[in-house]
Amino acid sequence: MISPLVRTPGGMLAVVVLSLSLVRAYPLAAQQPTLPQQASALAPYRAPALALVQPAAGSAVTADKPVVVFRFAQGELTDPLDAASFAVTVDGVDRTALFQVAASETWGPLVPPPPGDAAGPLAPGLHQVSARICSSRGACGTVTTPVTVLPAPAAAAAPSGPQSASPVSKKKRLLHALVAAGKTLITP
Image (cartoon, rainbow, N blue to C red; front, side, top):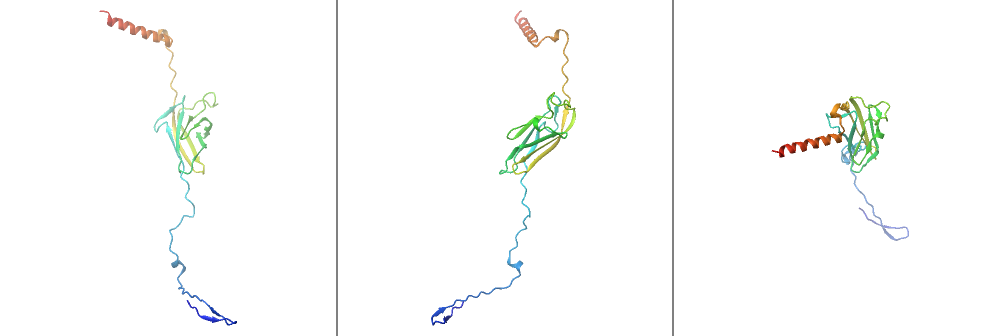
């Protein structure tokens, strides 16, 4: 720093301050510290978790009651689930309207109850079930799994003869049998 005294044209003294700084020339890359490579895009939000919990793995449903249950949880704490985004298909046919959605699970039949479906009950065998639920920011969780449908249990054939009595008479017969057994035990 230099501060000489200088006379102005009017005869007054003035102080002129000159500042010199020495600058060394470095290559540009050497002057800036190297930063870790940053991703060019933001990391996506974690998708919600979605799982088929009923029937359990290896289990099946019956054709007369083909009800399944899905459970879900949000993927990010700050990204709540959008329950209205839940969708389910069975063999490619949308069945979303049949399901009821709660806070952390949804349940419903794979086919409408009779006479709601023109195709009739679900045929026994493997069926492809796919479900999806999304968060409010658009991250979606999906699950696709085969579900085994077993034939409906055959209706018990109505017995003929004295066994075909109504349930009330069966209760009466049981009561009479117990009373008779009690009398046999009491009498010498």
